[in-house]
Length: 215
Image (cartoon, rainbow, N blue to C red):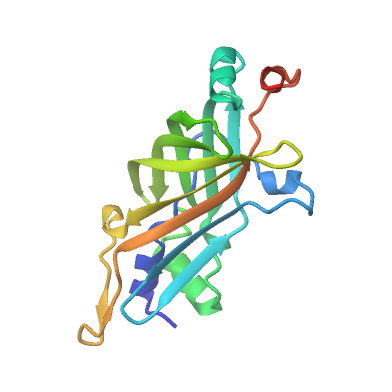
């Protein structure tokens, strides 16, 4: 089991999230044959690597119906706002005690959710996959930081858009100091890699206006 302070350094990174807009859990809206939404992060100390993940990912995206020219140019439905979030309690590091320590270290009772709220975005390429640059605010515990995240947009066989990407985070930016233990024998590296693979369904477009522009 990793020391509690080590666990805190490991997780002070979870990307994800979303502090604006009430998210809906997209995973409940997709069939079992489709990949589940998932967010995970990896890191290491000088002794071992670790990985923690969650499939309880909530995604909210509001379609910008008036941006039909942008939809046509970008090749994907234009979005006015978007956000993503995961409950800290859902993070699974493979060890029950580590999961508990992680929750306590992150102050899950007071701040139960890690969130990312989109401020603006730019589609950089419209290939298969397309690439997008997203600017937004990541909230972890009581700390919020503005950041840029790059991702790829892939269209599944059923037409569902999936957003995949990763972002390295320095946990020290969130007030977490990677611990040293056992006289410096254990050293946690401050850089954590956050990965995400989620479905994005812009709401609300009941007439299929944005989708029709892409056909």
